[in-house]
Length: 396
Image 1 (cartoon, rainbow, N blue to C red):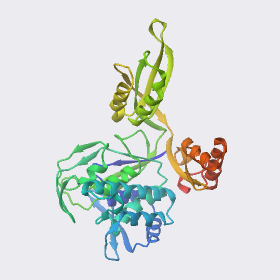
Image 2: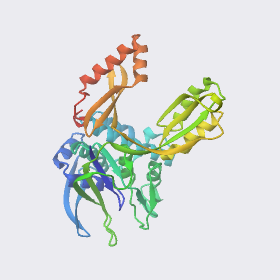
Image 3: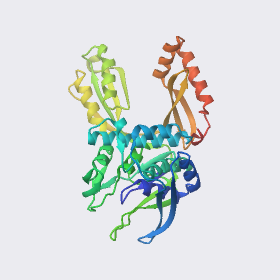
Image 4: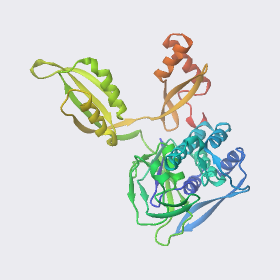
């Protein structure tokens, strides 16, 4: 599948990200025209610049109107009501939502009413929506990033002087791998961090892939010691390979009545899946094997949930690998009910799709029809949206 690897040796910002994608071949006219339909008045310049001997693309956004504060809910409405491709809308909305939630936590206000100063300006809207459009234009199905370098120092913003990493950046990067960097200027901006999260980015060293193109995006800061660049590598990957943990225990002294609650608690703790299997144990006793699949960061939480909510005195766990199709969820409207369609992708091509059971259950109750009929209505609605096996996801 087509994958994008971001080598963030000098961090990531919105303009660096957009410049690197344009250097990979994203069409500037496509990006410029689509964003101008949002009503933004600006000039977008893309120039080649040599940094430490490497030619990169520098993106410059020149507003043609005075920058003004915008509330998150206003930006959300602007994007929702636009004619942007659905996937670009999803990415841009996701990034702004992450920014709004982070800012609201830092400043102690309701996220819908967050006033965006820097990120509400025209240039930042161009960066976020531009990256979303470039991802669509390049048909990227999977985004992977290197761990992120975080510097120490201070930065002046409208609120005053903030420590680095900026509080909003650190809030957004919860769960992401980071490492300290000796540089004292801002390396990872809130916008760069929010875009990674909105793209459901994986974090790893260079993945196994066949390299097709390499692009570089230039950052604003001039550094005589390090190239202030973002390197983007576009290529083909096989099925998504993941390292997971199997967390298990055996129970032979507890009523099966607790099992539904135990599965619920394992899932709440972050398990990717949970299973209970009946077996025969020592001395010929009937027993049950509790088994959960968990990512590395959720492993201990899942183990704790099993111990807290069952009679076991301990759990065992071991590493495993799995290969999965890339997945995406698309909402369709079925007679006023939002039904999520889970889509399995091979590259940017749909190879499997399935309506979510709980949404179909709500639809069946709402319309007083059999569940099987609700599932069929959801499939028909997906078909009308062009969500079909064999269809390219970027065209939906």
